Image (cartoon, rainbow, N blue to C red; front, side, top):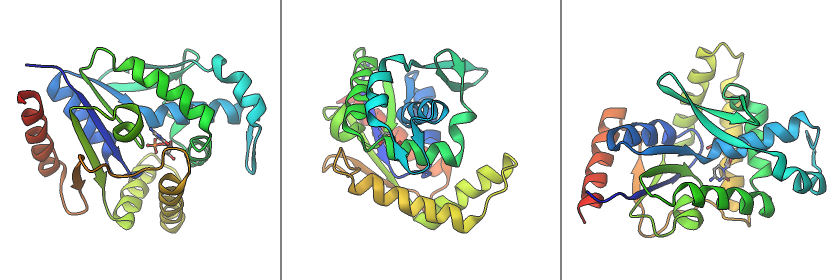
Length: 227
Ligand code: DC
């Protein structure tokens, strides 16, 4: 069976990564979470005060990009993100870092740097990569492209439940507001805005459970490796 690249794009908190991970496991492929890479850059920037609440020092960020080493390690069944050797998986999942990542991802030189790393990771194929520009910029020739979406309220509720379960004291309305703001920023920025390509399979999971989604993706995947 031939090895392919599976490129997945979609809005925040629509269950992309859960699905991408399940597909990678099924296929025996490597899963790459590109959102985690933007989050790691944001975490670095915040910790060095390059990124503050209302400013990003782009000159400093540019000079420090080569000091930001991002990796992925296995932690039991999970995949964790590392930043300069430190496991930062839980640190990059806060609302502050999500906001920083969304802002940092609008900067052209940051995207160029991360896209080059991502393309290198896909050289041998056999990967499932998710993000916002994977089907459009990183792997426009991927053998299988999927665009995932769900209603903003559904996504905000899922995110709220996740954060609550982690013990975070969050308010649903704040999360919905952040989801809508990030959607707008992700799809209206001048650098690689989130868009569905004509050849992407559309997965709207507002009314689908995980099993139903997985059945669809498995079918798409099996067709793509056969072709
Ligand atoms: O998928 P996520 O929420 O972890 O992504 C964090 C931020 O990074 C989000 O605002 C969108 C941005 N991003 C991007 O611009 N391009 C990607 N390939 C992945 C994420």
